[in-house]
Structure formats: C-alpha cells, structure tokens
Amino acid sequence: MSFKTSYKVGLVLLLCYLVAWLDRMAINMTVPFMAKEFGIGSDKVGWILSAFFLGYALSQIPGGMMADRIGPRKVILVALVWWSFFTAMTGVAGGLASMLVVRFLFGIGEGIFPAAVWKVIGNWYSKKNRGTANALILSSIAFGPAISSLLLAWFLPVLGWRTSFYVLGGGGAICVLAAALFITNSIRENPRVSPEELEEFERDSRSQAANAEQTLEKASFGQLLGSPPIWVLFFVALIYNLTMYGWLNWLPTYLLEVKKLSLQRTGFVGALPFLCGGIGCMLAGYVSDRWFRGRRKYLVFGCQAIGGICLYLFTQINDPMQYMVAQCIAGFLLFMAAGAIWTLPMILVPPRLMGSGAGFINTGGQIGGFLTNILIGYVIKANDNDAAAGFHVMLGALVVAALLVLVGIREQPAPAPARLATDTASS
Image (cartoon, rainbow, N blue to C red; front, top):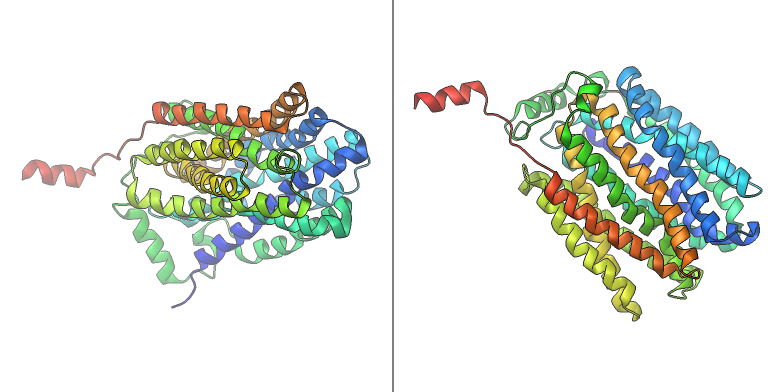
C-alpha cells in the first residue's frame, strides 16, 4: 500500500507548524535571562511576549486573503523564510526597544501562515476527514512548546540564549525545502497525486458523512462576517487563548519562581503537559468526527470544564508528583478542547473562503494572545511579583470561554438532499 500524497502534505504542514511553535515559544524559556540582562521587570516582559502577538494578530486576515487570492503555497513559503530570519534576529537584539521591534516583525511573518495552512487543508481534505486532518496538524500547538521546553533546557546552559535563537532560525531552511517540494494549492494541482487518490477525494466529498453538517455557504467574505457563528468563534478563540497562551508563556516562569525548580527540571516538567496536550489534540479531530458530528460543542465544553478543574488543582498542590499528574490531565483535556474548537471552522467555512474566514477567527485568538501577556504581566507586578497570580486570570478566562461555547455555538445538520426528501415523501 502506497503512502498517499495527502498524508505527505499533512506531515510537511505538521513539521512546519512544529518549527513555528518551537521558534515562537523559545522566548518563554529565555525571557528570564533576557530580563536579567536588560534589567526589566515582569510588566516589560509582558510587552516583549505580546509584541509577537500584535504582529501575529494584524497579519491574520491579510494572510488569509492572500491565500484565497494567490494561493496558499506562495504564502506559506514567504512566511517560512520571513519568520526564520527574525527568529535568528531575536539573538541580535540589544535591548528592550530592539527586542520589541524584532518580535513584532517575527509575528507578522508567522501571522500570514495559519490561514494559508487551513486553506491547504480545505483544498486537500473533504469534510469527511477535514476535522481529523486539522487536529493532527494542530497538535503542534502542544508538541511545539513541549519540544521547545526540552531543547532550550539543553541549549541554554551550553549556547546561551542568543546563540540558541541563531540555531533555531537555521532550522527553518528544512521547512522551506519540504514545503517547496510537497505543498501545492490543492490536491488537484499536485502531479504526484494518483488517479485513485483523487477519485477517493471526490468520492469522500460527495459522501453522506462529508455533507452531514451545514456549511455557511456565503458568497463573499463580507457576507461571511454577517454570520453569528463566525463571531461566536472569534470571541471563543479570543477568550480561550487568554488561558492557553497565558499557560504556554508563563509556565516556565511559574515553575522557576513559584515551584522553585531548576532550569533542567523546569524544561522537563514544563514539557509534560504539552506532550499530553499534543496527544489530546490529535485525538480531538477523530473523536469529534467519529462521535460528535452536529454536537461538537459538548466535547469542547466537557474537556474545558474537567481540564479547568485539573489546572486549578495544579496551582494548589505542593507535592511534585501530584501536581505533575494534575497538569498532564489538564494539558490533555484543554488541548483536546482546542483541537475540537478548530474543527468547527473547518466544517462551517466554505473552502473558497477558508483562508480569510479562518484568518478572521484566528485574529480573535491572537488578540487574546496579545492581551494575556500584558494583563498577566501587570497582575503579577501588582501582586508583589507573585507569578501564581497570573493563573487567576487564566482560570477566569477559561470559565467564560466554556460558558460561551455552551451557550453561543449553534450547530445544525445539513438539509436532506432533494432526492432523499422525495423518496421519503413517496414512501
């Protein structure tokens, strides 16, 4: 049995996303050393972390529109070259001002990437398996931070924080080569796709499973913005990312300063919840596609509710083994919720608007990422530099996001095909 070209494309997208997350999350392990060298406090650290998200948020919709207009392949290649360069430039920054500029420009480059990836997913996978494919690729949001934590715990004592960014920037060259070789705008444009695989794609696109959930078939991006579900997803992404990015960005500082772990133990303990989260995110698409079609929000809400309890327990327990177990369960469930949330745009948004539609929703998420670091930075400073105070913000946002998912999301089955309706009437 041959390895399908669509699988190869999916693996390349996963690799690129892993490197993207590795590059962006490396700052979390290095920022305590930057802060000491630059002589800045937690409020200024929050601005450094948020500068990336400002650029990232601003380029989401333009990136999606470019992917819809000129094709996602070109956008992905430009993004890879751009952010790899500014990853390396992070090691050149000589102070707060230059670091803010570099992180902002870094965010611009990564910001045009996600919507182009979703556009590729929309053009390479039918709605029968699009949720599963998206969740597998999206698992990088957990595996990337886990790998980053482990690598930086190893790199930093040997290379220092500046050289570590030079090495990470060089890794992008591998992604550029892989993307250039394998990624095309759609499955129909790739000469490596066999007639059998293309026929399977067309058959799956017509299948009952692929058409069981209603799509927002809008004629334009402007009309798509008139759909209430798109705005609900926008605000769900925004509020939920107050929790997720807060956790991702501030966990190393919390482990170092509150749990009093060494750098090496911080790298290990900080990686565990995201390794578990990667597994949860990978499973989210399959579980959602298999058992929660038309009721995906209940999977999201359940994972958020139980995961939130475990995250709270992580902050209250002092025994290392017990709080590691609590945060691993939290990681598994909260990233499963994230994966399930992102199956909804893959189903609701029509493929021709996948870039701009998904980019708009992700803009909400990145506004959340921008706000959370500034907010948590000031909350920590206001509480006598107690890093534990940041988790109050994360847990509060999680409660609001879970309630918004439960109340605000309305899923509908697709209307029955005319032929089936006629057959039923005649019987």
